[in-house]
Image 1: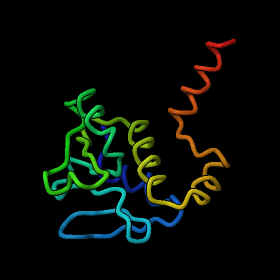
Image 2 (image 1 turned 180 degrees about the vertical axis):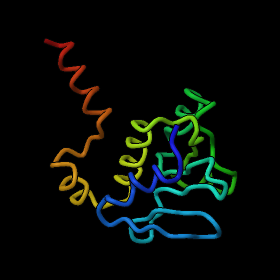
Image 3 (image 1 turned 120 degrees about the vertical axis):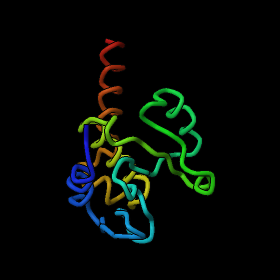
Length: 132
């Protein structure tokens, strides 16, 4: 289980990230692009996520992920229940959401020229091992 403080610890060290308080909740942005937002009651986390993949994410774990309110469906955005996430999942969510809004060269420099998240690197490694 993670909380708003864990979100802060994951997000604020990333390059170009600003923490802002907007209408009683905390959001994290790079320039004008918000990539994370903690709900007012600190029970959920909204995060940047590709629109075309969010239905599959929500369907895969409906107790953990849910669609944003109707007015936010136009954005690349999805929501998660903080209590349902572990630290590793939170790390991956924050990093992937940040990568959606930061310039690719900044992400590549921060990640050591490897823009893939930990899970994708592990999957690529597993796939390669399966071919050997």
